[in-house]
Image (tube, rainbow, N blue to C red):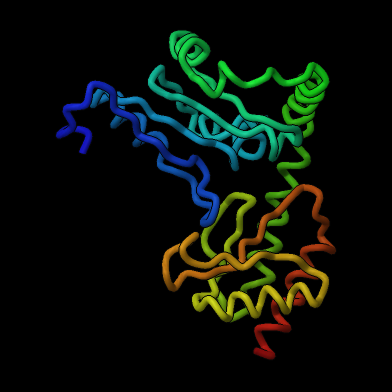
Amino acid sequence: MLASSAARRKLVVTDAVFSMDGDIAAVPELVRLCERHDAWLVLDDAHGFGVIGAAGRGVLEHFSVASPRIVYMATLGKAAGVFGAFVAGEPELIETLMQRARPYIYTTAPPPLLAHALLASLEIIAIESWRRERIAHLIVQLRQGLSRVRWKLARSDTAIQPLMIGANDEAVRVSGALQARGVMVPAIRPPTVPQGTARLRISLSAAHSGEDLSQLVHALCDISVNA
């Protein structure tokens, strides 16, 4: 498609970590394609920034990838714990956005208090690796614990762990049964995901304890047996 395009500007746009499957985009391959075909790669790393890569630097650090053709963006409202978002890239790109991007030009600047909180948050992300280590441990605990249930946990090495249920009504029923046990895990159904792939979207956090995961695992095992 890139080779056949006659567009003056070509953009390849992708999530870095996909929000419903938890898988990571093939960023190195996409970068090579964009460099070969004179295109820009726009990466939305909302679910990777602060969580994956050395010091939580996200998907580019995860793959050790750099390119002047990358437009990198992520939210500050997830791992960073504040509000807003950012775009990073080559100086010419940033200057163009500052001068031409209407949502930026006509939006009130964030308050200094928010910027100060963000600086503190970025320092915590960089130096306190135990949060990322805890998530990695929770992923292992979850995968081991759910090996006995009849639903399949999709392959994901990120904080997003989808438990594939299949039928819409069953996904809703399992989610409701969990909520009755004091555990909130949303049921995700079409059109958010493809037909036949309704799921429970388990979102792990460093704030979760091993006991929290045990409660979830035991509840799912019980629901699976008594379904």
